[in-house]
Image 1 (spheres, rainbow, N blue to C red):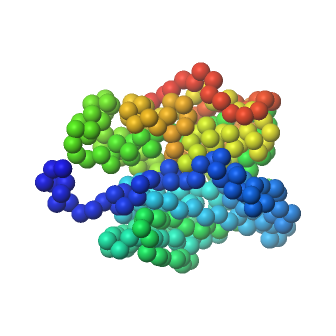
Image 2: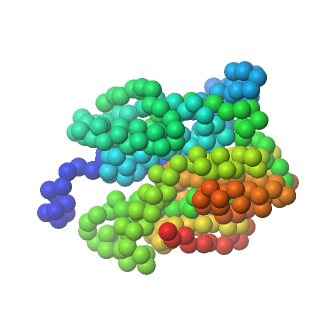
Length: 342
C-alpha cells in the first residue's frame, strides 16, 4: 500500500464485501424463500405484488397506491453520490410500474460507527434526488450497522390504466432498454486505487477508468421518471434492470408473462466490456449486476415508432434490445454489442 493510500480516510465501499445491487440475494434463492413462506401466489387484495417491482392496491376507482422498498450497500465512496444512487434506485421500482404521482420517500440508513460522519451527505444526496423527481422525504429509520446501507421505502399513486407489470408482455412485442449496461464493471474498477492490479485495470480498457466510472455514475443518478412518463402510454410491460442483470430480469418477465424472451442487442458503457472480462462479471452474457439501471420495456410492434419518438422528445436514451416470443425462458441470441459514450 502506498503512503497516500495509507493516509486517506476509510472509504464507504471498504466497509462492505458486496457493493450496490450485487448484494441482492440470488434469483433462485429468493424464489425458494418466497415459495417457502407462501408468497409466490397472487394475493386477492392486491392488483399485483410479490414477483413484480412493487405492489399495487386500488384505493379509489381512479387511483392505485404503489409501494416498494429498496436499499443496498455503497457502490461508490462519495457519500452524497451514494445517497443519490440509492434514492434513484429505490424510486425506480415505483417508476417501473408506471407510478409517479404523490411520491413519498421514507429513508432507510445504516452506518458503521467509524463512518457516521457520512450520514449528513448521504441524506443530502437522497433528499436532492427525491426532490428532482417531484417527491418528498417524509421520514425514515437510521441504525448502526456493520455494512453501510442506504435506500428507502417509496409510495406513489397512479391511474389504474397507467400501471405496468411484467406479466402483461405478449409475443411479437419488441423490448427496449433506457440506459446502457456496465455499472458493475465500471464501479468495480474505480474501487481499485493502488498497486499492480490498478495498473492491470488501466491497461485493460482504452479509456481512462475515471471517465468510464464517471459516466456510469451519471447513468446511475439519472432517475427513470422521464423514461416512464414517456413510455407508459405505449408499453404493455416493464421492469427495471438491477441486481439480476439484464438476462436475469428478462427471465423474470418471461416467467411472469409465460412468454419467451430473446435478447439480441447489448448497449454497454464504452470501456466496461473490457473491464467486465477482466473481473469476470459476465456483461457480454447479460449477467452483470446493474445498479440503478434502466427500464426494460415491452412495446407492441405497431406502437414502436410513436414510442421511440416519445422517448427521443423527452431526451431519454433508448435502444431496442430484443423481442418477446411465444416460447419460454430468456436467452441471448447472437447479440450485437454497442459501446455507448456520452
